[in-house]
Length: 466
Image 1 (cartoon, rainbow, N blue to C red):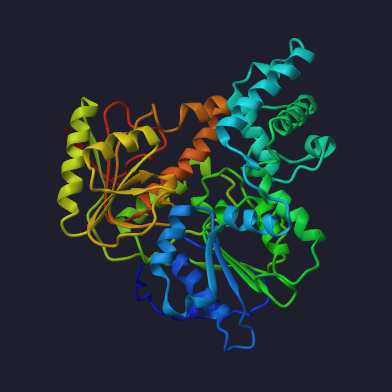
Image 2: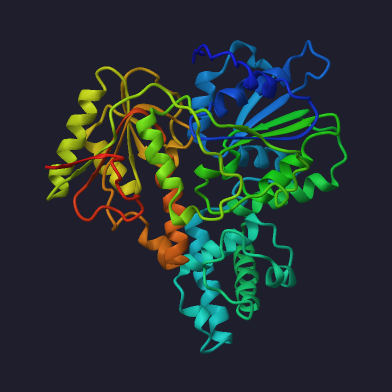
């Protein structure tokens, strides 16, 4: 797979790339501020074997699709840089410590099944406790949150501030019973032969790194899209670099879609004042205005370190919101618009649900599927289809977001598992991600009531009835 020419950082961007090659550095940018390009240049600078600071460098991100995209952008000077997802890094490190083996990780479908069994067992010991009227998804999400934040024991869990889960409606009095579910789940998982689930890997890597005084594999680590990393992931990576190495994290808090409300102190970073980049090089002013209006919605209230754009890419047409009487009419319109736009540029059809992705992909068999199985990135004009989650870090000339209804936005299963407020906060950020993937063209469609996550129009988009 060939590499492509990357823009050379200029001005402030160049200063960030060449920041001191030791310590912890945080770089915050608005959507489209070139964080991914800077991350690649930063990794290249740190890995330069001819420089005194040069050493093997890890460029890591959360999303496997983004790794494929980064590999597509790989410059010739990238020989001393490894580009992998965090979970691949963690599995590799644990294997090097003889702490990982084949079939050691419990898959999500099996985790949910075992958590459901654990809930039933613990509920039988706590008759009449309202906590156990919740759906299994609530307990799965709560256990995931506990692991992502490195909860050490029951007392820690009871006392811990619930960053990112404050709306999940669980009292401190209920937390001991919830922790009992976690303990029962671990026992069931062990009895079934699994040592980990995916959310265990960060804490397992962190604990192993704390006890490991061997030379580190990487002198430098660069995190791209760091807002998606849990505190435990970042803590483990901070331990994975030597004293004369560096950890650099590029992040956009406004794009956070995994509900962790990450702060630098939570993640154990000893960073000074974050560098902030406010110019938006990707989105037209019209698209950026809608993204900024979404970021000003109530579900963004209290978001730390928000970076609002002050400059934009070239002007383009206003976003368009198109309503239909039926899903069939909507589907035909989306396919036609995508095919027309793909004649001269890249098009991303981005959806909330995997089932909707499959339905559109069946009618566009030659489209590039944006998912974890994507092996190579095709930069030519054409159509890509995937979830908004899967498109994290990517960009397209035109983005089309179908099925933008109250039925899907916010996700009803997420609301049942946590709360309406948390579902709105999570999917509101996801909406921001989808909108800001577009460079020049943005079309949102719906057959049914338009999602309430959208701001008041205020001339932010053109409305069309079909």
